[in-house]
Image (cartoon, rainbow, N blue to C red; front, side, top):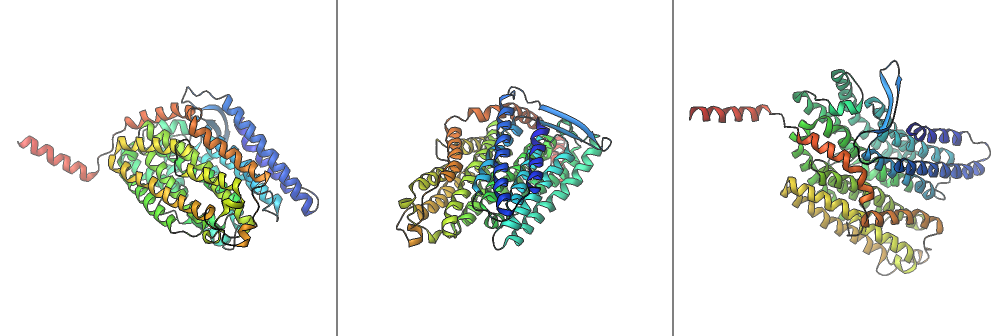
Length: 508
């Protein structure tokens, strides 16, 4: 079933590229085929969820076929962590197709094919159980996103696409070198085996840093986050939706699948580094967001701040922190995609993202204002929305690990409320500043069809999060047990201090 879900969108993308007819006819067919294909994949994702057993941490729906004489294998399988991210991917993709229905008018078949190819690669990332197969999917996802930004993006699309590609590719080269060493040391490329393998303590730190170089850029973490605002500003609306909704989550998935279980000792030892970068990212990017005049840039910087919650929660090394980080990822995936679409709705009418150009939008676009308000409240973690569940659990987990870090991270909730409410107040309320704003029509049925499903999921996760969290409990419990058994390797300085204290004790 997993192979079918990965290969089906690739086949659909190939069909789109070979469509006959003139440009208008090809565009109409491409939109229909892409929407039907993504809806079928969403149905397959729901079927996968219905057949999933949440009581075990073992990988399910496994498939295996040796490739190139056993150099690596087509090895697929999912646990609860993979499942929820696959569901997020297949849920957002048909909404991205609908979001592009009228805004993309040139080379439509190629655009839709790029989205279908990206969906295939995203599903591959979350299903791969071979490290080299994971790497192929992980890096392959750069190509369609690079094309989407570079061809259908804004005026500085070439700069933004190159920056996005080079930043993410550079970190992944170090990860590939680490993977080659791991395969040689463990004698296997199977992820489940490597998750239980004990790598030498003196090597774990270097392996951890190699993987960190890739995942930190993908999240993105401060200070390697600078590619994200440029990519979001220049990307088309649907490109920003899927970039913030799913692609950023690959970094968090990498931490929870590779860094924590495979290098537990190094993770414990370098926990302080992740906490320090997370605190700086949260405070700094929140303050930068407050100074933005471009709506997309403001939401892009808010994504960096929310991903800081994820990294801090993952490295809290307890159940609340890990489960909270996963819920933050899911919530942010939906809320940020919705916020970027809300920006796209008014951009299609005014062709500007400058906050100063808007004002009083709630007067003539009341339905839009209600949707925008809901997603703004979810972004600031209002109780009853998905954002509250994730951030509350994450802060609770961090508090158990470090009260100081939890206190500093809590400032992000206040700053997040400041810049998001400032954005909403300037856009929705006040006097209408121009005749262009007064003439803007309210959301169309197609736009409601994009916004309403995301709104329902945000409220559902906020009121009844158990259904989403149930698949996470078993793999998170297994990971926590693995981390609790790890002891940080003594550094040379720590070893010398300990030996000096022991010798002084013996002398006494």
